[in-house]
Image 1 (tube, rainbow, N blue to C red):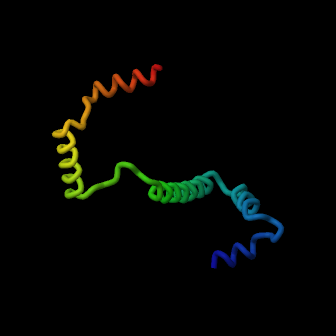
Image 2 (cartoon, helix red, strand yellow):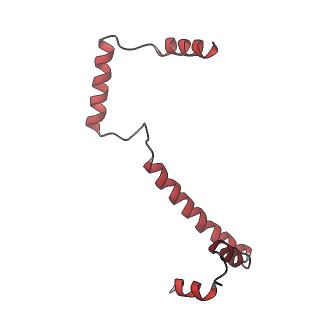
Length: 98
């Protein structure tokens, strides 16, 4: 129904952007705020979808996955495969200052 109304109102020579601009230019400030709220909601939804599609290094884990990771870390510590955080920080800053 809304599509039919738009087709009737929109002159054929106007692009969608120009037609939308014409519509917006006749709205009151309150009506423009309502349109802005809808546009922002669309943008946020689109942004959330894009963020979900991106790789995130800190993903939620099940309890079993978390315990497995902790056990793996404890084994690394027992075998001496660790470094004190302050020592690592000093090395890092030394490399950066070079």
